Length: 199
Image (cartoon, rainbow, N blue to C red):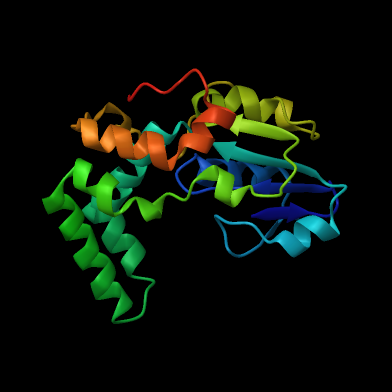
């Protein structure tokens, strides 16, 4: 979560929603912005205390969000880089979990490891959202924020993470589709009512 007292905004950054891109761009435009832990979560006390602040969030279709989560979980280079900052034995556990996810495959990841991707309706519970930045229209939506300078962000600017995972096709078995539609039913109802088709 990010908070800016000068511009009076709060930004909620759920994992795997182009949150890293949004984080970098906001800090570039507004260096005084503060990062609040948990980075991908919400601090209800702060939101309540600053209820007048403009509050927005990044989101992504749950199917594509799960695909991105799997890419990050099974990308060994990414995992090793991330694990360097973890103390033992957490580092070993994290790398072991990565290798297990690679061996198990995407459907098993959805069935057993989907806690990596907390539903939006749990993250945003009791939070008033004034605006959404959808990953599919990231630059357009970012430029639509009612904040000074955001309109100057170049249209051609891209999401900062490598895009290779978007081009990958993962086998999504019918059971995994049912799990996704059930686990993220409120997210689909609230944010993607007309977009329930896998990939």
